[in-house]
Image 1 (cartoon, helix red, strand yellow):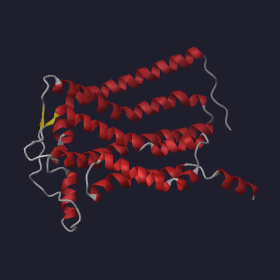
Image 2 (image 1 turned 180 degrees about the vertical axis):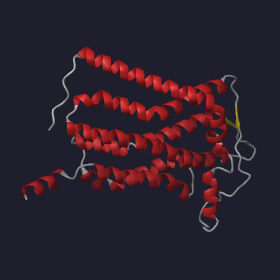
Image 3 (image 1 turned 45 degrees about the vertical axis):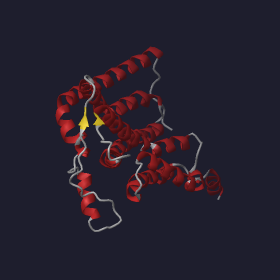
Image 4 (image 1 turned 135 degrees about the vertical axis):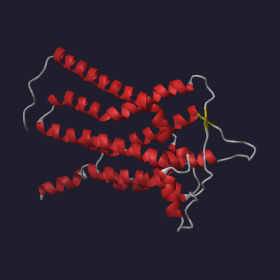
Length: 272
């Protein structure tokens, strides 16, 4: 095991932390300014895109469903959700808050790098190598989760809930605040959920779980994930449910790959 870097004093650690926070805030503000300037274009072309029938997911599913009778109909060109604003200040504050959210997403890899640079001097060489890959995997999985949330989970949820009517006399008029709250919630929730393999790896390193845990509770996990998928996309058709369930179950199996094998089997292998 390679030695750690020379130890720093308390005040040196505090100074390093101060510069870490300062550089992270500067990066966040820089991306926020860029996002603020580009926000009108982003709203028209990206954020509001799932409200229109020409959204890329709907076009793809329309072509896919043309030859499969059990698929829901995604070829409805009349689908169009109108988002309205009922609060005088909502558009201005949504402009600012959305810019900050997008800035956080864009600066996330740099913030992770700054955290890594701050903690790495206190680690041994083999610990640095493992933690470096953990930080990299955390970033990739977070972005992958956000992409899945934007391109699949949110549009499917929006399409179902936006067209759901308790009575024909009730017209759905979606407010800007309601639309953006669900947009941010679902996308970031998928980004966090996709961190499950990293969390499993950390719990395995701490000795809380091993691979036998996933074999033992696989059936329980399937039920829980089906319930979670049904909550995220409250649609009645199996296809919409599977759009969320399949990535979640894949994460469960991927998490099992990252944890260590059962302790008893490792001991037997060592003895042999």
